[in-house]
Length: 438
Image (cartoon, rainbow, N blue to C red; front, side, top):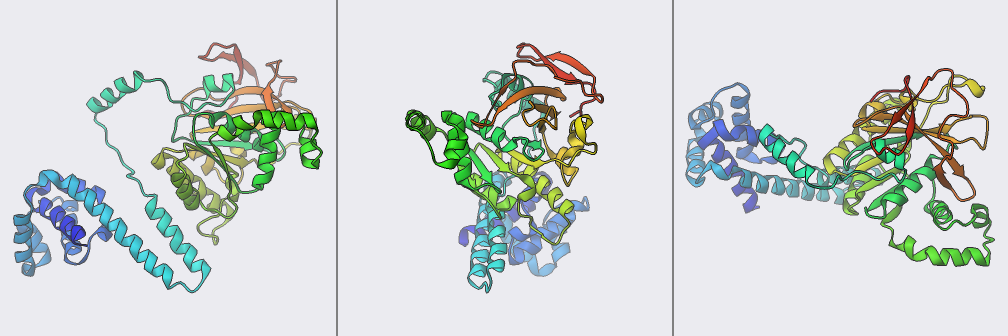
């Protein structure tokens, strides 16, 4: 505790010595609850003076807190050699404050009389452990130096395993990406295929809130080994199937992909586990099933808050968050129903606002079970939106592959098709003028 008190004294002393220079930094990095007793009183006095636009010095602070603090103010100034080390003092103060709050929560946990009370405290602990500095200020000079340095390095973009998607949908680590689809469109199978591709070089966590890990593993073995999915489900694998699985087993074991049974987990729970497992990318299947912090809110309010929390999680941790999302049913039925757009994301318009990128998966011919799938880039923060990649779904092996014919089978009445050549220059991509902009 002595280290904690020394840090508080040094931070307050720095503001008394050089308030004009360091007060802004101190007020940005610390809050009232980071201080104890008399130091909290002095911090609040300095904060009030700063907000009022008045100077912070021993005279103005004494006027705020009273003459009984004169001796303490003099001691703090004498003990603090210079305000130049305030960042070091703040590092110690913030760390010790967090540790003290964690110990207090741990003590409260011991006295809990119900599991529900313990879960609330556990969430507070995880949120505290997951805290990251939220603000970074970069001058033009430093920004230009950073730009030069970044351009000397290879681009660090998220691989999707599909050439035309990679050439247009350029997402970075720390982005929040949404993969939306109607039920049975194949979004779980597609997300597993994307996760498998990325897990070759990156640590990927697949949080399944709906499907048991055994079923996820069945699909993965099917897709990777090329074994018939029906025989896997029926437990009727043939000798040739077993040989193929054995041949591919070393490649599967070497993938940095982990499947997490995540039913009942909140965003705080997912973030804590993602940080603990050091994931670079996580998939969440699916967003509307994440446990809300407050179950008394309406469904729309819950999903809105979950979307905001996932966006903040991606930004503050640097982990790419790929969340699957259900789509609202189309208004028109039959073959003339409209293709989905950003407005189709179910339960909250906040999702389309928070996401850095949105992919929508749907059948080209809604009433045809064997229809090709359209993968539409509905929102693309760093590139063109509206592009459509046509995919063929191999249900027997739970795989997607690009269609040989890269054009629509039928022309949607609501969409006028046009072509756009990607920067990868690997041929034309179909885009629609009526597509959603980023």
